[in-house]
Length: 216
Length: 100
Image 1 (tube, rainbow over the protein chains, first blue to last red):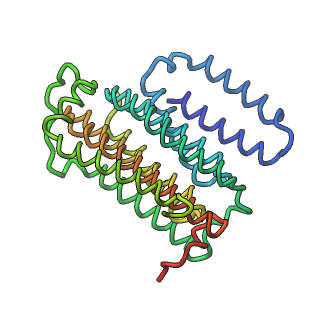
Image 2: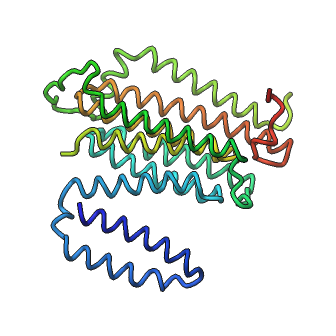
Image 3: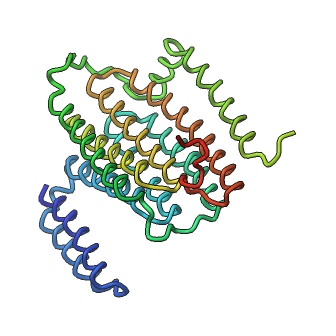
């Protein structure tokens, strides 16, 4: 845990030094890299714990999500979103969802993000001047609502023991494998599966019609 | 092993960041990306609970959410392209015809 907190503090220090001395990247990089190496040597047993890696991935996930929102250049937003999707895929692996981790990388980080990247490059969007993020009341209202909403979810997580709750059953052998997912998908949820295929066809036709220059 | 609350907290934070992003950004493509962020946070919550309760139904749900997200991204980006062609801008303030 001290290793993780130290590394997070180092990233914060690096950002601050970069902001204070713009145009001189070495001033920030050298001391932060030395301190990081010293931390790794001092606390190297922590590298073998699950908690350290989970914390690190969580930190990267939250940082990249923040950068998606605050980066003025849409191109960089797409790249940080891909980083976030990879972090979530690693969490899926930790939670024994191997099949969905693979799907996450192939479908999300592969197909959907390529679509986003393609549109950003096609429209040739420049970075927004001064990051136009709403005006006056809208901006503060948005931050207030965000804080309220995350507070509400923290409260729900804290108090979820009071909700109806079942103890987990014993783990089956192939939990999270493609076989188990497919077994449910093609038996109990086969109607939803077919409905989703119709939805995808409709979305595909709709996208083509919407993006077409002239109908007929 | 990690407690499930850790994953729930990460998902809640990412969801909140995405929600704030939808509210404060004015670029339509970035807003769509923030929606993807929120969908992902929900997926993580599904997987965390599926692991805690050792039930596979959560995984099936995530599968459907991914399919809907793909459809939503395709249609949303097509709309952005159509608006951009008309107004030369991907700013949501410029597409205010249906605003009350």
